[in-house]
Image (cartoon, rainbow, N blue to C red; front, side):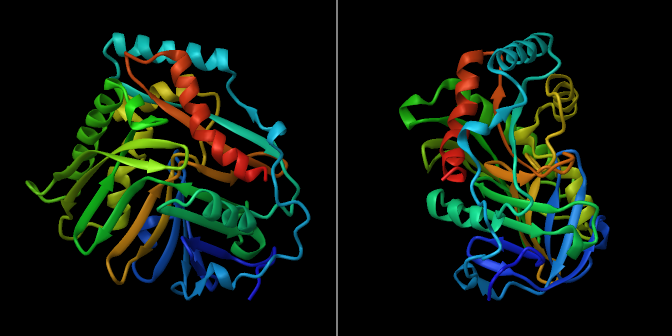
Length: 348
């Protein structure tokens, strides 16, 4: 088979689904079937019911309609300059000093204009080859197929599990702590992780049975292309009768990309960040309602077509968790570290 610009395709790792059945924008409609789902950081939900994946990425032949599959490295522009970002870090530190927040994730968005036929399927192939990730995700959903008001086009190399489900068992694996190597990890990194684990425990407690929320693994080191992360696992047993609308309402947005306390951090983010994050830091994944299974990732290390720009625009978000001990220049460097390898792949 081959993909063309008029076809709906979603991919998770090497598994591809192409038979779109219906579209919804309310998680309450997830009552049966297999769904690819996306929710923006601001809470806008999209569900796409497909026949279960039966194809592999190897079955997708080169896409002959494409003439421009690569972004240009020199054309990426940041919506926050280095000086403004470092000033923003200081603003977050002042909020921590006042006791308003303990930690807040502060992000910026890189973007550039693209041709209307820019190939997110080919970009996804490049990511799988050049930056293998445990939660790689593809959405190629043209508006003329979905009847939505916008295209949903995403290629993600996310390393972070937002939420998995196996029967009643829910699991979240927040990432907090990033460095070029294990020896470069700071005390700040482990402190961040501990704070966010506590936040995830609280979020899960709203939908899980009392006494079942546990932390079976804490502060393990995971290696990814060009960097290392600290990762923890938080699990819980879902209450009887809870549906996906209630789960997403309790858990979103992800604590690792918002902050603690979450409500105060979200207010602070709206003050220091100049525009919506859209897909970035939202949720990407699949839900099998009939089997009570799911795998949802935090939409980091993610390229997407802007949901708001007048002309086709590719976006990539990058950010850092800010604590009182944060060094503004160091936090800017962390955002550069997270972006550098992936921008190179997209520009190849």
